[in-house]
Every structure is written in structure tokens, then in C-alpha cells.
Length: 186
Image 1 (cartoon, rainbow, N blue to C red):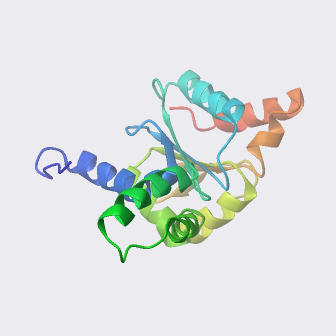
Image 2: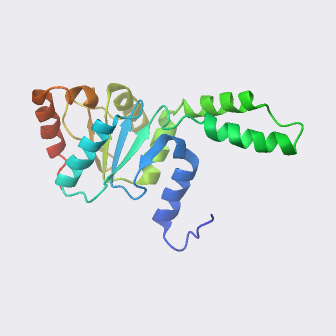
């Protein structure tokens, strides 16, 4: 679907990001918080972040989740598309070939890709959920993170965890994570 840039330039850009990088994204298209992980976060971690940012008055369903490794296994979609293509074109790539190409594309996100995604989504807050995503985010923005202290990324508030998922395993670490997130309150 083509959208006119004259209607809402911010929506147009955000839709273009979802179209290009949709395999890496999950959550609300209009989210104001961008959470980045090396791999997709567990349901427990996603829910904890959603509820935390709701309590911090970022609205309902405030998060979009970016996985550097991709959100979905592309084989299902690629296989069904390949079947349709191979029936109409004898020179079409084989199903396995398409699946392997799609896996290669989905499994990589560069620092420049991450920068493009974050800038296109235009969130108010960016959270790196693990050390890998924090390192790539730091390279993308040429910035560093200092423990659980908020940083600025081109005016956005940002926070980096070493492993948000592991912090949910103990009540003491959960309290530390909550204290860090509270620093991002509106």
C-alpha cells in the first residue's frame, strides 16, 4: 500500500521502516519506546518492559521491540512465495536457495541498519536489553553507556542493560532494573 507523504511525514517514514525491516520488529507501530535485543526477548521480559513504561506514563502498548537477529523465521513465508514463483518461472531460485538467502538477510543487522531503524521509528526512549545490542547501538550512535545510567542519543533518552532478561531472575536485580527504568520517567 502506498501512502502519501503529504498526509503525515512521520507516519510515512515509520511505515517505510516497518516495510524494510519488519522481520526485525515486533510491537506497536506508533510506539514511543524502542527496545533492542540481540535476539527476541522472552514474553516475560517484553511484558515487564511494557508494564514498566506504562507505569512511567508512556501510554498503552508503548514499546516496539527490535531484534538484531530478526523476529521471525522467514522459511514459512519464503517457502510459500517460492512455490508460487517456481510454478510461474522455470528460472526461479529453488525453495532452499530462497530460504537460505532470507535467513542470511534476517540474521544480520549492521550499526547503520540499527541507526536507520531507530531514527525512522523516532522513539522518545531507546533501551538496549543486553550487552550485544548496547555495543551495536553505541557504534551506531558513536556513544557509550555507563552502567545503568541514562545516556542521550541525538536527544533521545537511552539506557543499556548487560542482560535485562537475567535481571528478572532475582528480586534484587528486578529492583535494580526498575530503579534504572524509573530514571527514564516523563
